[in-house]
Amino acid sequence: MATTTPEKHDTHHKALSINLDGTIFGSFAEIGAGQEVARWFLRVGGASGTVAKTISAYDKEVSDDLYGAGTRYVSKPRLAAMLDNEWAQLLSQLHATRGTTAKFFAFVDTISARNFAGTNDCHGWLGLRFLQQPGGEPSQILLHVNLRDSTNLRQQEAVGILGVNLLYATHFALGSPTELLASLFEDLTLSRLEIDCVELQGPAFEGWDLGLFHAQLVAGGYSEAVTFPVDGEHLPANELLYKRALVLAPGRFDNVAQMHGELIRWTLADLPEPELKDSKGGLGLFCLSTAPGMNEDGQVTAEEVMRHVRELQKLGYGVMVFRARELYTMSAFVNRYTKSRIHFAIGLTVLVKVLEDNYNNLSGSLMEAIARLFSQNVRMSVYPMKAEDVERRIKAAGLTGWHWQTTDGMVRADELYPDAPLGHLYQYLLSSGFILIGKSAGNEAAAAS
Image (tube, rainbow, N blue to C red; front, side, top):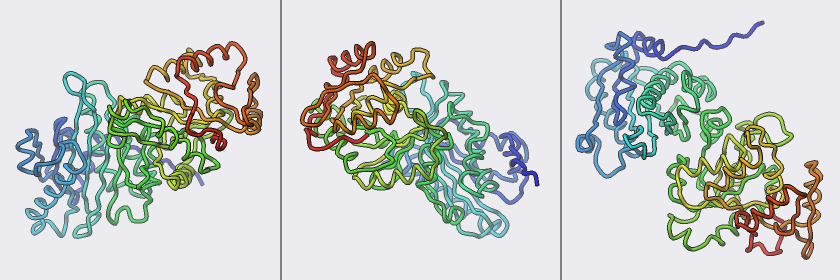
């Protein structure tokens, strides 16, 4: 029996179908970036069937009067205050007359679109509280988004599309997290908008794994990266990374060992005092990628990601999951939110993989990759490994042209000698201080791959 692909609908059709539903009824409150979501429902026709109220508290004093002072205007606490206020007002005004027939909703957003100078962090929060049936228990979804378009107008358009998709998906595409995310991203692309943090509450999402949902944001191509802080609380990257001196430990981590955590601990201990003084302090994170590595096929699944994340969090540090596996892409993402130096804490075989990658996606191949990486205020702290581990792993990867010396059975970064011409580039990176020899590890143990 042939299978059918779910029919896709454009934004106009979605807004109109909601307006004509007759049971979906609620309010819109939007701060910043105009009233792009409400605009869709007002212009497609039949808005009286859906829109109870639309408001834009654009002035800060007006916003404080409605939703309370004391929170940043583009923040989750401000979004929550808006949602509580709008939901309470909606029910107090309409529950008596429409409570038995209407599936009420309150949609709110607070958005910082591109300013005139182009100097701000373009991001925002969207929230929806809704009923699946009249008189039922409410459910709620909050989204943090990064706006990637280059103009204010395009960013506003993307927010409008996402808002319509959100209202439509929560009523017609809640069969699974995969279905919901696909519906949320219709008529959008990752180059326009990222969803990097989600909060789910209520009966509509009963049984959903929030960690798995976040992993699917990356694995499914809805975000460049998501964070998994060690305490388990999901945060957008702009909050977790802001002004932090970062130590990132990238790897596949198929065999998690205590040594992975030691790499981070040693590198954090070695951060120079001036770097810490000019930041909000050091933060260590493991880095995973959903992209296949060299000589590998297929994307990593969300389930695989979460298995690794949970194992790594046991070692005492949070995790970032990226779509890309290249270090220069990871550092470019992190540099959106911190100007402090980024240290990659790695073992020797990770360093070898970085230098042996073919970088087919770059016209300048290895040279361009190295230039991109180290032009972003990046250093590599490379820790020693046992000589037999170096030999075994280099042979397993099918690499040739690498030689080394040993000291007490260990190989340090400055005892590794690739053949020319790569050897010349490697010596330059060592001599210039882009590659640092991990100090705290000493010869205690082999560093992880």
